Image 1 (cartoon, one colour):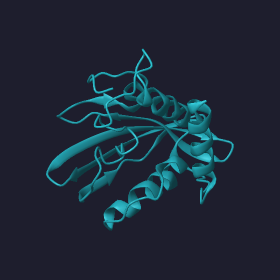
Image 2 (cartoon, one colour):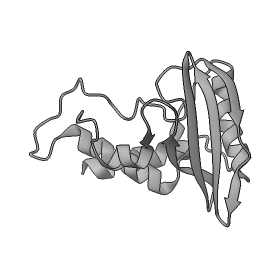
Image 3 (cartoon, one colour):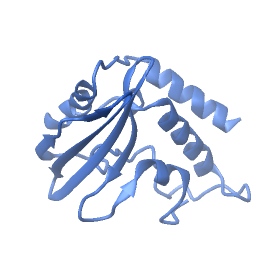
Length: 162
């Protein structure tokens, strides 16, 4: 039941104000434009592929109870508050550089580098074309600190927080 509710929430949120992006670069520009002015997005779901939305919905369901059905610690980190495009919750982006996407059929890959406050970041953003335009399908952090793959973080609990 919770999974159904989470899927409905993501479906409704993604339909509100969602724009169709005709190419991968326009998608990346739309994602990073607000961060350069100190603004935040109302909802990141509009940028996610169907697969990534499903992974978030499953993670949301998993966060509410553990495998034994016991409620999870309410102080545990919440993946929904983590913004994978800036590797955190708050942003002060400097030196933003968005690489030209490399395309292969309906898929594209681009590298984004920046400093968020004093933290240097390098992200590899995988995108795919869906019926309503280009969407982000996965994000990999390739910087000098903790490396991660968003889809993996959503499916597993590598840091033992949930």
